[in-house]
Image 1 (cartoon, one colour):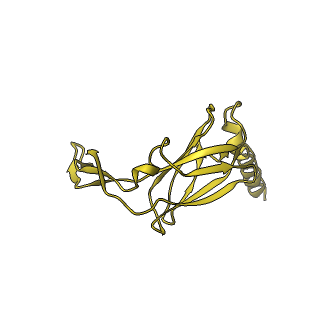
Image 2 (tube, one colour):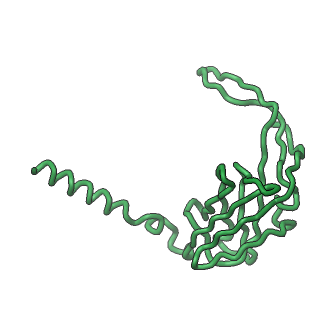
Image 3 (cartoon, one colour):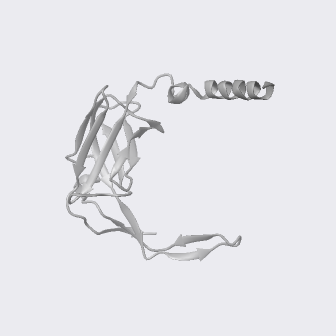
Length: 161
């Protein structure tokens, strides 16, 4: 019984120490942040492994946030690593770059890695640049969920890897 009591107290103390969540570690000057989930589709189908960035329309210290889409095209947006985005108006950009033609190599310790290849962008340039993107979102205290379609896939050479 004593062991069970000590174990219960230990677990309670551990949980109390972790209970602060993101707010315990966030910078003191960071404004409140609210959940933002963005779904990206390309020609109507979920776009997996795309980088989604929100850039504040008015300059702010914490003015950009980003996320990576999952298999369903959904990106949970984070600001400086914290889930959520400050309230405001944002321009949304989307990019999906893929390395093609890479080869597998092995280093001196026997670890394998990819080398070489060419990098291609799969999203139309209109959506990859903040000054060109027509995608916009308003983040509110209620949280925000939005879906954007970035049109037909492209296959544009970016650089050598």
